[in-house]
Image (cartoon, rainbow, N blue to C red; front, side, top):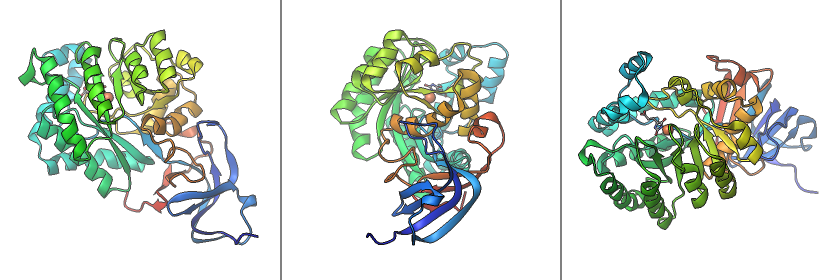
Length: 409
Ligand code: DI6
Ligand code: FE
């Protein structure tokens, strides 16, 4: 007979929604979950707890719901400044593209971000990250892309790394140098992409880059340009992802599929061939309803087709100062259901197990499974769907990151 287990922590009197990719809708009522060494060591019905099990810390969940910590797999949380002037212009009828083409939009945030020192950038980004953390986020992707010059891009990524070091949070960084063409390179997009390709090995050698992203759009970079960047990434062993089909379909999903990329994000415009390529490439479709909401976009990603093709759909905040000033994963859940037609279970899976896949973290986090990181969020709700059905209510009671209860939220 094996000895009774000794755990670091035991959560009792909880209902569990493990959100595994294989069966996201499954639940365990009156469950328990044990942690050892920051990992999930046991989970199941409380009645099945091994006899004699002990735990250094016991948490009484009071009948609340325990879910995996949320993963926000697409954000631009590190930036300086704000863009409410642009919000007013858009309300007045001007388009996002028109504002971008005359030097507003992304470039206006580039000016603010270039002017901010590292401390300032950290200080401005921190409240956004804290807001996400209060909503149960335990893993956060952070992109560069508002520096568009070597030092400012590196600074953004250093701030992202610092957030991951100083907060109880897992941070994954993406180099988004090819986000917009900076004014110094006007008319020389190929030269700018070449500069990004030269910069990437340096940033990677400094440990600042986990993946490479780009904005593949009429107002940004062509598929040929993105492909050059992706080849550089591949040579460095870095995974790729792409802002594809937000405003126009240039074949970004096909490119991601061909490279076996982590994800194609947005996809308001994507062809059937693009969907098939994502399926064949094992890539995730990351849906960003915040951008649809704030841009009053009328096009929608083809959720029914993605579902039918079996392409996993993740959901993220896209938190950025222009098209989704929304540091809220709970808002993304609600908008994902209302604007995109996701079911609450799909939305919850989109912010957990499928978001983990979009970051290459499926073996590490994103679901309550034996051996995975004990990234947990306890919700005072009657049913998990309640998290999607409301807006402006945060019922998160406790969050644990790698088994450690967060106190300073
Ligand atoms: N798509 C987006 O939604 C954000 N970036 C991108 O490529 C918008 C960025 C911004 O407007 O600042
Ligand atoms: Fe984005």
